[in-house]
Image 1 (tube, rainbow, N blue to C red):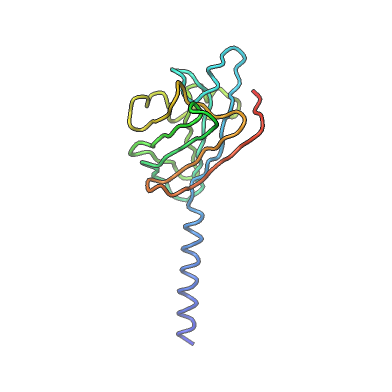
Image 2 (image 1 turned 90 degrees about the vertical axis):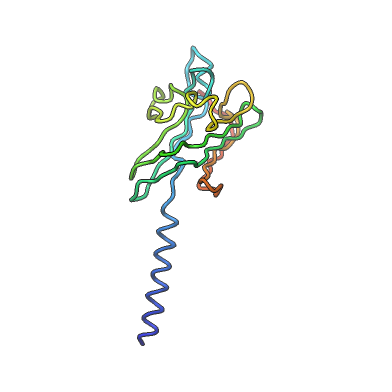
Length: 166
């Protein structure tokens, strides 16, 4: 009887550990594609000089502060301007139940969006940021944003298609 109880205890502990590991995930909570501004087309970007209002919001649903140092956020679309990678700098954390927003400096001006914690254009010319083309923006018709940990393990992905209107 003791051996059976011990096996049940070990199996229960492993199950709870697995559930804890699966729930300890950061999510891509919001993606702002084709940020609206009727007077300035450059808002429709993550990086275009010092402008841009597109953004990505991450959410930490766990009971622990989450260190995302050296994690990667990657976007992909149909042309070179629509592809980019950002590596989170050392010391980047998301608090318990908290959010972290990154994008253009005008991201917070969009209704319901938080101001960016990380303004991407401030990383131009550093090893943390890479993109091709003249600017980095999210595809209005189809694309994806993916989050990877420091070891390249996928953590979340958001894909969209259709026509975004702004």
